[in-house]
Image (cartoon, rainbow, N blue to C red; front, side):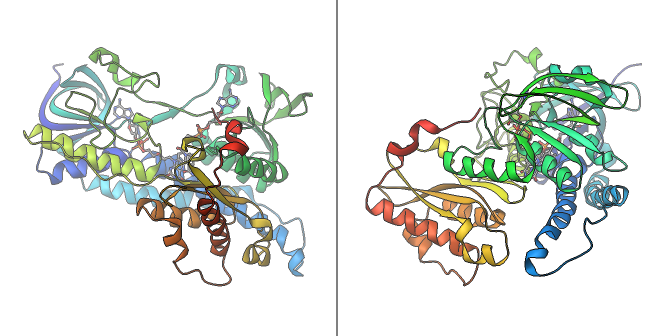
Length: 487
Ligand SMILES: Cc1cc2nc3c(=O)[nH]c(=O)nc-3n(C[C@H](O)[C@H](O)[C@H](O)COP(=O)(O)OP(=O)(O)OC[C@H]3O[C@@H](n4cnc5c(N)ncnc54)[C@H](O)[C@@H]3O)c2cc1C
Ligand SMILES: NC(=O)c1ccc[n+]([C@@H]2O[C@H](COP(=O)([O-])OP(=O)(O)OC[C@H]3O[C@@H](n4cnc5c(N)ncnc54)[C@H](O)[C@@H]3O)[C@@H](O)[C@H]2O)c1
């Protein structure tokens, strides 16, 4: 059967968050545009990412909050009963609602613009798609946006566990809560899902390595976060996984714990949260002979999303720049508009990029805004700090744990960034990212209103300390320049 031939200005590979944004912008620029999707419609974020994970976390936090009632003088019959099937049914039904909104958007795209099947490069202007409906399509495009996302990595050492190794996608499709899970990898997903499952009564062990925790790099904040998380769940932050073995009912896991002791325990499942790999190989990208960096990503301009000296654009998780939802949406929009401009003989433009902001929805939240500690010049940077243990409103609500550290430039007085673990710091992180993007000085930030009594008063304490250290040129360097970790 002869392939169906298409000629288009722009082809977008992947109908995730970045791809859909690229499609919309390309159309808005007046370019003929095709969008190719190999997997299910609905986006990673809505189907198996941001939304179902936050739904599971919401149930977990609701249960965990019961533990605080007694200190307020309120007693319920404890332990509370957790109906795993109902917990997971709500996760899925609410998740499906969010997916439904995405599907409505996809349904509004004219059928002739949508191609179902996995795309591969033939050459830099030609894609082949093995159509889901059978047969092949050949697409000749003036510009191409690569928005193919990323896929979870399953380390070789977990392979003997066979069908008992699961990834985030599988967690949300479980009809009920498992009894026990070994979570490997203390990154963002491991912390969020590991703690949520544990708070829902699942026996969880989280294995980390090198005392890393999420993306934190400030030694003070990291130590606080390790301490809090280790009191919250069974978290071995400096563990060594030795082997796993499929048993009749689950997986036998052998590891060395933080105390250097050999441990061997059986779990229902092993959840791999050891990072994600970019989806470029499945596009036959190598056929283009474009040089890639050690990360596997070709050199590209993060303001235009253009792969150097080409008509190719790369947006979302697949470029491994900042694999977060709002960044994928921004990148897709910039890439789609530029792909359309280039295809129509116009000059491409730099798009707006926002100040860095990242939140781990653990309890308490872990967050970073602006520059991270590991990116600072510690010889010209001062820090300020608040310990939420003594913070008024946090104590009132019994959520008084964590540390916030803010950084400022001793020469300009400008706010540089922050790392934190603390109560509802998802909100403080926003205030700080906005301040960073506006280029505010610490003095200007302190001139803003702070209500009483609120958790943000803790931020004011940290900023006051920072302002004093800036005035005294009291830099971070001598104290902890040698303590930065991270992998
Ligand atoms: C468990 C989890 C929780 C998360 N939580 C958050 C959060 O709270 N906040 C946040 O900001 N971010 C979160 N993220 C990250 C966020 O989901 C991603 O950054 C975002 O979804 C990336 O969007 P994307 O468009 O790059 O990729 P995707 O949405 O994955 O889209 C890529 C699409 O390309 C398709 N594709 C791949 N190869 C081909 C091919 N050859 N041909 C055709 N189609 C192809 C795929 O099927 C897929 O549909 C989370 C991620 C996970 C996994
Ligand atoms: N709240 C959010 O915004 C949110 C939530 C979930 C995911 N995400 C996005 O998804 C991305 C992927 O998340 P992730 O948690 O899979 O990746 P990650 O890179 O955040 O964490 C992976 C962790 O696994 C560890 N690791 C790797 N191999 C290991 C091994 N063999 N043994 C022990 N530990 C090992 C790494 O040291 C790292 O700490 C994140 O970078 C983030 O951008 C965001």
